[in-house]
Image (tube, rainbow, N blue to C red; front, side, top):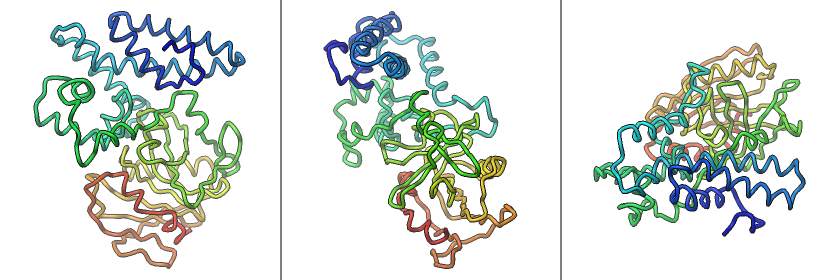
Length: 359
C-alpha cells in the first residue's frame, strides 16, 4: 500500500514499508529510494495538515526511517545478493552499531553506555526489549550460526524458534520506544527557582504515587524525565540508546525533588555518576534539604553491599551502611539481596510506597 493513500501511517509502518519495498529490492540504492519515498509521504501529509505541523512530523519520520533502514540494511540486505559477506562489510556493520551505542561518550569521560545486555535492544531495528532478546541470542550463540543474529532471528534458521521462558508473542510485543530529536523535547526538563519544570510547557514535573518515573542526564547536561513503562519506555528511550551521565528513578511533587535513586538496569550508573548528578542539582540551585537519595551498587546485579545517603541541611552527604529490613524511622534502609534476573525488575519490586516511608 502506498503511504500517501493512508491517513493513519505510523513511523513503524512507514519504516517497514521502506525496508521491504526499497532496501530488499534495491540494496545498493536504498538511501536514494528512501529519500524519494519520504518526499512522497511529505506531500501527502501536506494536503491533510497545515505546513508547520507537517514539517515536524516529516522530520521525525525521516530520522526514524533512516535509523531503521540503516540498521536493517546492515543486518539482512546483503543476503539478498547471494554472495558471501566481505570483511569490509562486516566492519561497516560493526561501525554502524558501535556508533549507535557509543553516541555521547566523547563528550564526557565518565559517561555510561548501555550495559552489554541491552546492546541488542539498541541495534535491533525494532528495538525489542533487550532482556527478551538475550534469551534468543544465547541460543544463536550456542549453535555457532554463521548468519547475523537478527537475520537468523527474523528470517533465517531461527525464525521458528519459540522459547517457553520468552515466547515469540512477548518478544515481538515488548518493543522499547526510542525517541527522535524532536520527540525527546517533550520530556526535557529545566530547573527554575529550584523546581523542575518541563521546558516546552513550563509546567512543574509531578510524579503520581502509583506510577514509576525515571530520569536521564545526557552527556551534554540535558535532563529528561518521564514515566517508566516496562518493555515499552525505559531509560534507553530518552537518548535512543546513547550514553548518559546518570540515570535512575525519581519522585517529584509539583516540581520539588523528593527522592532520587540511581537505579537503571540499562545503564548501571556508578556511585561517582550519582555524586556528579547531585552536584549538577546543587549547581542549579535545587534545594536538597528534604530530599532523600540512595545509591545501590548493582554491578553484576548484586545488592549485597548497599550504601544509603541522606542530604543534610548544608547539602553534605552523610553515608550510612544498612543491610536490614525497611523500618518506619524515616531512614533509608536497603534489604540485602542477590538478584540474577531482569535488572529492571529491581525497580518494580520497590514501590513508591517504600519511598513515602522516608519523604
